[in-house]
Length: 215
Ligand code: SAH
Image (cartoon, rainbow, N blue to C red):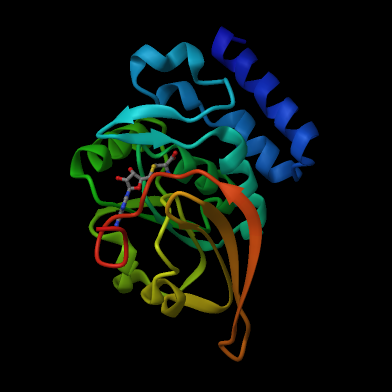
């Protein structure tokens, strides 16, 4: 076991204990090499449970936030998932592990340079079930809709309507909402198309940009 693998295992075990993680989320966190997704100078900090800068004023989410969002989405094998805010691709890789080869992750990133970095990272690690799109994800991604699950990794002024429309009946969405004070919402669409929202609690994300984002 190399030094990164050892640190990663410890982090995953701590999170499993602290957050009472399901086996599948624990396994994905224990497997995905976060140190290969952060800028090289942060490699040694990759297994500390904290966000880190990835350039362009953006951050890679803290591992506990990635794990919590995966649990709240109730991801399962075969799910078709839409991620808004690829960053460098770490969260998408964790989700791709859980949904497996029968599933698919469509991830939309606004900043083309970050999308390129994410593409390289995911290719290098052999993830074939992740498709990265450079676009304004505040409008979702209609060509691949509808999705079983949708999650947003940047905070929105309110829940963008196109995302609700692109969610399957029976689907779930997890999205941070708010400016200075932000809350993570779980949105469930029932089979009659009705929406139910639950506030999970306070969080801290970078702002969502674009048409349905902050100006
Ligand atoms: N998912 C990442 C976190 C990235 S931070 C991880 O694995 O840790 C949030 C990302 O959202 C940033 O890269 C930012 O550029 C992107 N973003 C902000 N507004 C966006 C928009 N309207 N469409 C797509 N991506 C957006």
